[in-house]
Image (cartoon, rainbow, N blue to C red; front, side, top):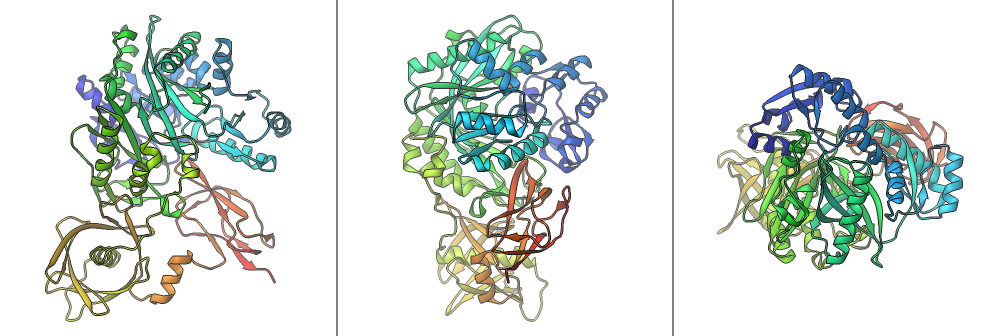
Amino acid sequence: MRIARTCRAMGITSIAVYSDADAEALHVRECDEALRIGPAPARESYLDIGAVVAAARTARADAVHPGYGFLSENADFAQACLDAQLIFVGPPPAAMEAVGDKIAAKRTAATVGVPTVPGYLGEEQNVDVFVREAKRIGTPLIVKAAAGGGGKGMRLVRDLAQLHDAIEGAQREARSAFGDGTVFLEKYLESPRHVEVQILGDRHGAYVHLNERDCSIQRRHQKIVEETPSPAVTPQLRKELGKAALRVAAAVGYENAGTVEFMLAPDGAFYFLEVNARLQVEHPVTEMVTGIDLVREQIQIAAGAKLDIAQDDVAPHGHAIEARIYAEDPANGFLPSSGRVLDVRWPSGPGIRVDAGIDAGSIVTTDYDPMLAKVIAHGESRAEALGRLQAALRECHVAGISTNVGFLRWLVHEPDFAAGKTATDFLDSHAWPGADVDPSREQLWALAAAGALQTLGAWRPAPQGRTVRFVAPAAHAIEVSHDWRSGGWRCREAQREALVRAAGEPTEFDVHESAQHHRLRAWRTETGVELAAGEPAQRRAYVLDALEDVAHAGAHAAAGGGSGSATAPMSGTVVKIDCAPGAVVSAHQVLAVIEAMKMEHAITAPFDGRVRSVHVRTGDRVDAGAVLVEVEPAA
């Protein structure tokens, strides 16, 4: 969607490709043309070089823009495009190979005098070699995929006993996400900042950097919030980082847009991390402060034009902060969420930009990355940009699936974040309070009505209304009956009652209690009901089925169930079975691993016991709630 926007502004036709999972996706509807390239699994569609090139030829395209992920840093793909006489909007294959492979990039950086983090960069992928090198490096250390980024194929190891599983998991995830399972080891720096430099280079040997972005707020090595300029970078350090980035780019003959990433230690020392040989997800913050359209620059460079920007022309103005919106459930361990989007409200106003890939009616699957949109705020100062972002997130909601919007609202209000005191372990030391907070009375009525409406649907008029029982976080038992005469819902608790009506939108409700009236937004998710209350954290509650016992279901919601069934928390693919019938297991021991949204998720034993049965095999596709393994208590 982002790339197509610039293409339209330049008078260029945009041609989308899509898999079966994305047949109804927003980019398919919004681009000028669209072609199917295969089934849902990425290896059979978006990672299939032949299929993508064939689609470009069929469409008689002139150029291919690889986007942010999948094949965007694959040198073989870049070469295949050139072989097919297609312009590749990115670096040439040789340059991509030199920096796209993180091992090769670190070696290059060292040769031009840019500091690198100690680690093992050898080609040997034998486990015994990894163990020997890990002992030399010492813990904590990171296992990283050589061919990718975005937090995929990465594992933190604090105890060498974890190394074997970490390597195996990182290799498997890297093969799935990037088609290459090569990994390397790197010393883990405690509490650093993640700072990166945006660069541009043309085929005529001209280079320019557009200053730094701070991407320190991360979860599972995945960036969540990015900003520019970095609160920790001084003017002198900015010059040093820029020069170091351009030395690496010049050493490999880099062309087009790229990002040189660094770790900034608490003592001010910086270390080369990697080069992302593509456009970064967080590029909008650089565009907001420089006024430079990076996609336009990419296309012009790929067409052979000379850079029309000199280093002295780069004059950043103000501050910009970006927050990524993901389809995930923060209250349930940030597990991926999927389903149909019922309603979307994006913010607007001075200094606000939204880059989104969904709208109302979009279906979010677990096949690909869970990022849905980005909200970017720009201001004259960091304080102004932050205030605008806080306000924008209050206006933002995505109904029908769980998202991290409530979590982001809390994060951007957190005092240390507001003060710019961030590091990559920020979320380890700053606990999110969660969304399971006791709603106000009017909010509770709206939650109950939304749960009933979206659980049981619009009931047909009948002489007597049906009743659904509802449990909120504070264990309020509410009876909700459909009042067909008023076209609303009667919500009752003890001696109090309210009438709640749908307000014209799928997620809007008018709450009438005595002489008071409130309009609120609420919607069903996979795990309950959420409410946009304009607070730092969204409200969450649990809905019961119409015939379910209140006390039983309330306990179930609080405890997450109590059976011996290890179930899939989301739809996905089984990539590993780590137990067999009859095996004795301990509570929280890993029984199976499933992959969803390009990340792996461990399924663990609910208690000490013995495996009664295993219901799946490696490679099986499973739905959310499917029983994978059954465990019985030890005798």
